[in-house]
Length: 271
Length: 271
Image (cartoon, rainbow over all chains, first blue to last red; front, side, top):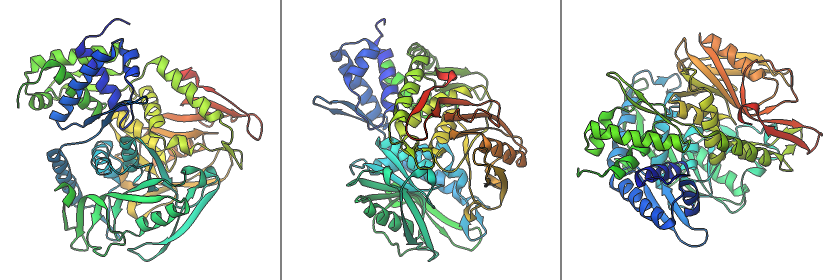
């Protein structure tokens, strides 16, 4: 292939890194694709790194050694994160979201790629240092968000099912008590879905009392694995006695009146 | 903000475009963020466009007019697509994938962001010209793939549930017959989930006889909407009388022996 100019190479490098968040990309890959010497590419990478950092668009880490290369870590600036959290608050305040059962209709937000991709970057950056092996969620509404977090962290997604499915092979099922309704619920996970001794984070759409998170913790114990973090889009702070200690949310919400008036604000993490 | 050099600006432009696939980004946005004149930015964009096209990494379209700007269209080259399809075949040939019930265990692939993000680009590029309003799937295994296709096409994801949920508000439920097992099944969708007169594509993990796709078609009719395309990761060609005419798959599969030997190859679209 013909030689590319620096302007051209930095575009390609940016694109490849963005497609492989938290994965080590060896200089060889760039070298083959862009027909450039490693020393030249190293200079290109410095440019990409500097501009991403300057514009709060993520980090590039260098990993040395035989299996070395560079790694793109998705991140958004504090200002942009706050702005997004406020925007989410406005969307949630919208009349007509409270549906029978005093439930907040959020499906449209959870399935909106524009919202979920930004929320995914915000939550994944909270767990960047947690050495995560898997992102786990329970079907269904949290799946796109959990998927984005898994993609950003460069790890596999795991989805616990409400009932065991023939397509999952041998499964482990547990019963747990919903912290808000007190009802007994079930979730199950394929034996094939994770290696023992794994570190997992649980991602979901909504946190009430935290019963589901506690259930996940117990389910992971059956896989000799550990829950090392919890992240949700919305935290319902009316349930102020949570069953889990530490978790991250993007916004906090309170249904003030059993109808439509709601108090909603960015969480402490993103305020 | 200080002025950035051209090689800095092209990095930022690439990043912003990639984060907003199939969304029109106005030049104003770049102009504010990068503190550069529109004429300068236009030259930058030419560079980004040319290198992406040269490396088969996607297209940039210019939309003129008041609401104009540029739009990034994800795409991968034919060679890379074929290579990916072949790799997927190898993964599927792996012994131990056939589990009781003559079912292919594919959960690990469907929840692997590296695989799903590439498959998402391949399928979305098949529907780029279809004027899609929504991507629809049925829970659960196809959700990450459907989400990727929706994100790439810049549209909302819609997920039909197996049973109606209180969190979904008023729902419409239909019964349909599974084309492979002949059993009656149900799916339901929130009334709030889509506007009437919409054009939808259905994305799923696996196609057997196409009963689910037919069910989706009927469900969409209840929403006065239309199914304009179908895309799946794996097509089981043992079921050679499909209930739907047109669909796209990435690989084709045949369980030759009721055990482990499988015939699997890239689909015609990606061979």
